[in-house]
Image 1 (cartoon, rainbow, N blue to C red):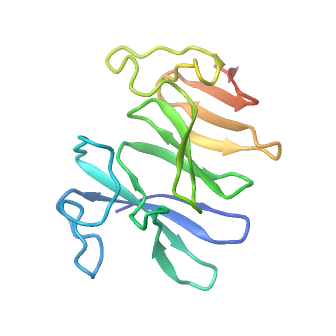
Image 2 (cartoon, one colour; image 1 turned 30 degrees about the horizontal axis):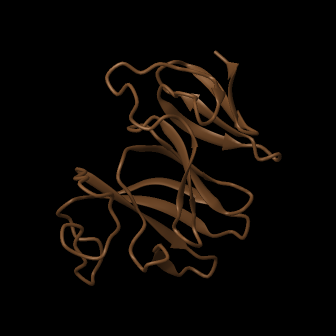
Length: 171
């Protein structure tokens, strides 16, 4: 099912489409359990999400990484946006992070948060992006300077990620 949608500066639309592990991905009978995809070692998610691109001329494609494997998001994504460089930025609620994907190479990068730290008792720590801990990152926005903002779903606050720092804007 379609979960999220964003557009780039050229007018292409990107959607996240989620599947259960056993659901067929497309009419070519590609199956997430056995076929051509990229997963972290030993990770067995209940749901996998692919990134689809709808070009300005209406062509639909499923994005792949540099090795020709589908780019897969394995955790619960709350929202997506495109940055000025056409990277897909997303909030990973499961890992409590904000991350990005270079859509040219498929490379994933951590923008802020300590992945999976304090899974059962999360906390909120501002400061350097490499040390910051995010509580429950949700909806995203980006301004003309490239600063990223997210709404914390449970803590009722707006947080800014800018120039290597995480700070509270409101809440």
